Length: 269
Image (cartoon, rainbow, N blue to C red; front, side):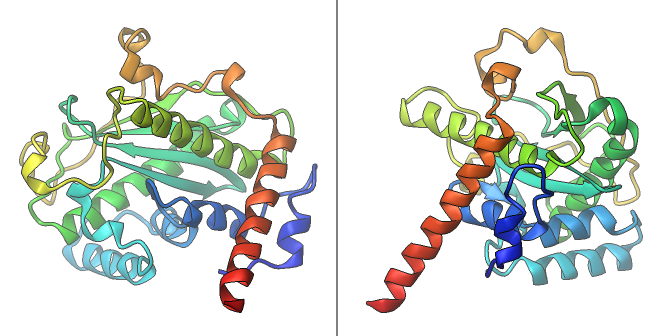
């Protein structure tokens, strides 16, 4: 994709980071399943409709946008997926995780403006995750959805102190989680992301059978019982873990220019 000078300027302190910058960052991470912004926007903005035709249309539209990664076409292979959620003028991060040692896949919601946007933006996240699950099931009919199959957990996380850093925080959350998990893997420690794409034969925690008409219900409590679980701690972002917004902006500028130089050098060979 191509970024404009306006996109780069928007990375200066006090500016709103553009959709294209966030999309560039998410598309650039090849290790884990980062859902591009256009697909995430489709999942967030499309009204929930459980009719067969609407789900087919939704899956078709999502798959057309998923030419690059094609991760939506193999949902049972995904251990984790990062989705940038935009709604009501605000960005947040939704993380889908399907861990082998846990009975149910989960969605974790990281919102940098909880006090002001918790209710409305949690609903945006719910819409996105339900539509994502519909796409998953349409692409793989053996993957089922029922009201007991998934849960949404709103995570406590570092909060922004102004009205223009939400996009930066989404990138920071994604960076913090993905680099931490990659480090755990490189050290040979057990990781909830031992591999993003795994063969179907090793998937042992498929959700219980459900019907296409099933409603979805979610638990939003961040369970205290997991606070000392090393696996669970990998998914917590505390204030001390946070990268300062201006430092994250500088990092985004560096990777954009690095990618530009690399592509220019490749083109000249």
